Length: 312
Image: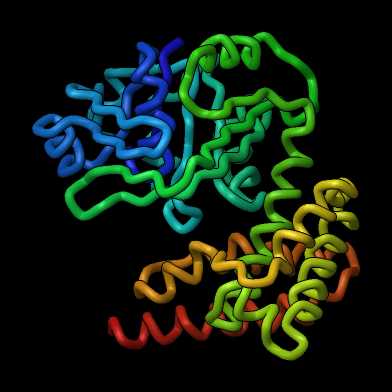
């Protein structure tokens, strides 16, 4: 199976490196500068579960992709605000039998990919990893969390999912085929929107919020709003999953923050519309009121407006 990984950053680079580590046919679609860096130094991952160095990773730039494809599987891990550009870049690598596996957060990217390639080519998928790309180009995994879930969106066990399973055998991350891929995407979205909404609005960790008057109740109210939207769309979190999320999101002394808060603190771009705005819109269409999420979005858009003003 020929696998194209779109990008070689913290997420795609990590999972792609782990696949290349066990000899899978992996090519990374990268910008010219990243291609030069990888050619000179290789793809380096520093990890608590074992470092890896791919000395000569296969890379391709967008202008040369047409001559390198088509691929059997495209793993897409772009940021939501880069999605349209990423689709344009990897489109030449998609053939009649290509499966596209996105591991973005939220759900709106499925609409974009379905429109671009047809829903029959687009799988469901999620991942969980805490990693960053350092200034010198090394991928640094900061915890042992590294799960990767995929499956057909209709829940069937297809031949292509079986083919992906075969590619995942022996890989050094937690890979799992799921017959509830879309539900798991929604469950992650409910959790992530609550975490991002609470920590960005309060500019604090979960533990700091819980320790403040009304903090735990605020988080629980936000979680209930997100769950109500998911349920109204037919994908409410399962009871055990929701209970685990509630416990995790209201844990005393928890240092956890969302990556979106870290992006704000670093002055970076954020996925406000994809993670929060789209949830509000899906709630509106389903008749679910989301006043807490609306306040969160106001704060996120104010940050984006400030960044745009300062850059002008």
